Length: 283
Image 1 (cartoon, helix red, strand yellow):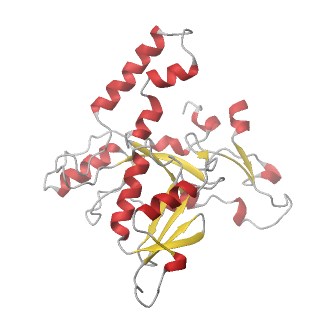
Image 2 (cartoon, rainbow, N blue to C red):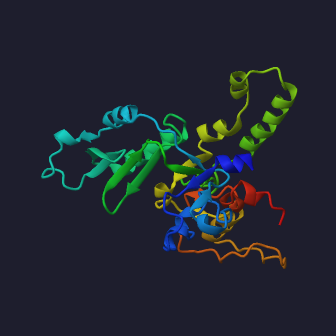
Image 3 (cartoon, rainbow, N blue to C red):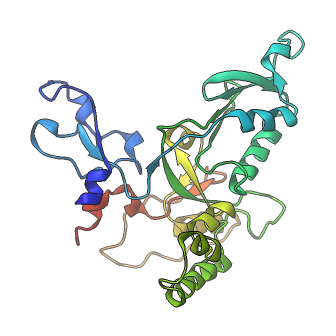
């Protein structure tokens, strides 16, 4: 109850309003706001709770990222000549147009790589709008983000392409963390413990998981479970799926969509859409 109260959000609208739209659940709430936990009565739908794994960004300064972009051939807005280079991609940093770039694909790949290696803060949002020829980068506070597994789409390793970046080695390190913490219970400081274990920060620094906010999710292809991802990969390489087991309690899911060429992310677990109180109900 205490944790749930700390993750509560309040919509600043009069409680006696007759408009239903602000109270209704919206598609963009998926994974960010609990669909079940809301009070009855006048506050119904206006008081919400954050989902289990989502958090609100604290915010970082944009100066280091601006320098990083300038070192990677970004042309500053003051020096930009639209007549000479009309097809250049605009680059926005926290809503401000700071410059343009002539090779957005390479820049986007570089930005994603450095974020997944822990060079950029994990809560940094990087969005590429291909149609409008824009790259938007956000480091400000107040964005609601949630973690997702990253799917490997690099073509240099055909065996790993289309699979999760998460491997058995990462899982073994997480199991090893439990032994380290059990043996060193009460003898390590918080700083020593964070250095000794792989943990959540290790998953972020190895590019296994990354945080996406609602706007970056618009440009991502997210699959529901790792099993669904493996099914999609099997069909793409010409394999056949095993017939579904006759289990009345299995999850209802659509048939794999063969028109989807690749997925970029995978849900950690479908139950992560729930809040704290909704997830402890045993049915």
